[in-house]
Length: 242
Image 1: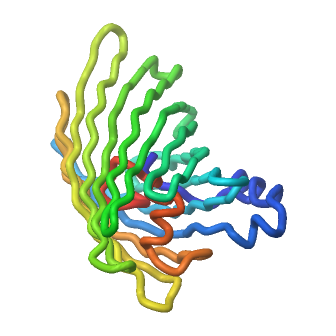
Image 2: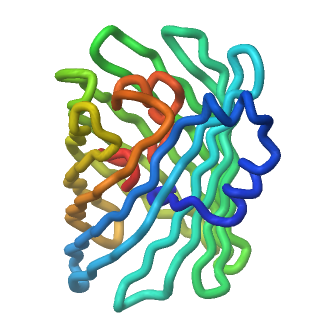
């Protein structure tokens, strides 16, 4: 999943949370712009995205995320995912399910995830399986990210992924490698970020540039949000939210 926005399904989930739990929720809402340069031409994409982390008791929490993005060259796409996370203090693990829909084509994804928290960095990865019956495609992937905190509100990201898609007896591999940065203004809920990702595959190559602006709530720093579970948002992309 690459872009998320607080939609009706996310708000419905919030409506079922008790007042005490709601007071402990955290998350963010953002807007982003992405420019994609490929072998077949260029494309610009605009989107809005959001996430919310809800304590569910003990060391468990739920991470809900959703998104909408659109461009002049393609139909709009809606994506969403739900994670169940166990936070052990210096690590977190869990699983997720999600779906994406665009132009009557719907994909579903399921996977597991793990993060190890160090004093000034986070190493996280997930494994996933996705399927789309409309196009008869199955895909398997491994995503990873290493996030370095120069300060509690300045984060540098390295992201990578590898995936294989199978359709009609044929298969194709794609690899990505990227870097990004996000900065949250001190004593402010607002943050800005930028990222670059290079994608190489059997059929195409792409350079992906993105910028984002976010409004954060329920925590005080980017590092606090990471430790609560937002490290799993957009995992495999250089910058969270892309």
